[in-house]
Image 1 (cartoon, rainbow, N blue to C red):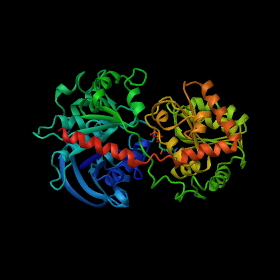
Image 2: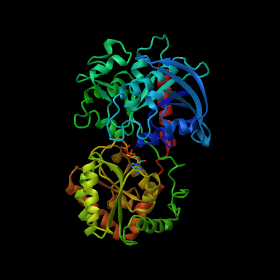
Image 3: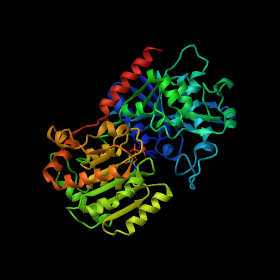
Image 4: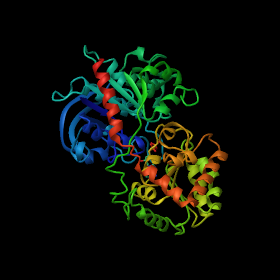
Length: 488
Ligand code: ADP
């Protein structure tokens, strides 16, 4: 099967979150399942820097009159079995040649022409689907998140006797790509598309809604999130539409890319370790404590957060639980960036507790590896969580996840109680309500288990041996592609 994957990010070229990890891992995993995956990306500086053997395959003019070249090339090492990944890149320096974050400027303001930047991506996908490259065309286009959300609309209105089916994957329904109504004129779609049954959303243009209306199938990154987004609480105003498409909506869990995340092979760890040989874990912990200015205490349970510092990720709960951790003899380490208020509050708390709490503001991929490798607990008390990757990395690196029972967290972590300890299914700590009392109780359970060394080791071992491999998820995508292609 020939698949074109369309996304704005791709690890390791460009990453702002879990989307990049998925877009980077999926082509190789699908390659192992017999799919020929090519990717389409905007020509951001980091993407162009990695592209090898670029060759122009064609060009098109955007609805607002800008010429865009499509270049084919290769990303070494990102394809199946470490081979090359075949890629298409949009060459439009006026749209993409901006350093740093792909979506906003240094002041965190979204670029004013974002609707054009991602409409060009969508039209690029449609042109490739309908024959721009005479040497290769996809049988299905798989679009990720709102940045690629307009592509199913462009393809639905394409004048062609033969339809190329589309799959749209929601990585986070909270980010919808909404723009003022006046931007519709730039999109090149018929007027009928700007209505309640099209991409109009409370008077605005919504790229997310465009995808949910026009894609042949919608997937999201966990079965539980697929159900949750059909409710008013988690539907962000799109739950009615999602309910109406329930027959074409499913959830496929993300996996862990073993070529990037493997504690036994991880060159970023001072002391690689594994489920059967966990000794290196304690050594990594001492290195991590020293590096981050925490007291080097082997017996202090080290709780950590790696992620965006936002309300979604439960940072208000993390703040409310600091005393519980420190009074219980533990330590807290936070790596992330996000809301200024939360960053400030965390930094203030850390300053008041030298040796016991540390905060690293910013994005640091290597430190993230060392944190999973050296910590005892990975905190993910999210308000909502489409899949979540950090709890999966925590499991694999022997850092027990402590999570709220929501979205993909509910699908991937098993709470520790006598029954699950006994049948060896326990992998972490799970609480229900988004409230500090149940969160703090979960912290106390973690502290109590930590004092029972044999039980702790057993739960850690359970988690480390569960493989949330991409193989299983890629097989599900492959089967979904096959059924969509066969019905079109
Ligand atoms: P989301 O995509 O909602 O941000 P996920 O858990 O799905 O959350 O994915 C987050 C990814 O980004 C993980 O790979 C995580 O390790 C990484 N990450 C987030 N913040 C940081 C940071 N400050 N430094 C390094 N890696 C980070």
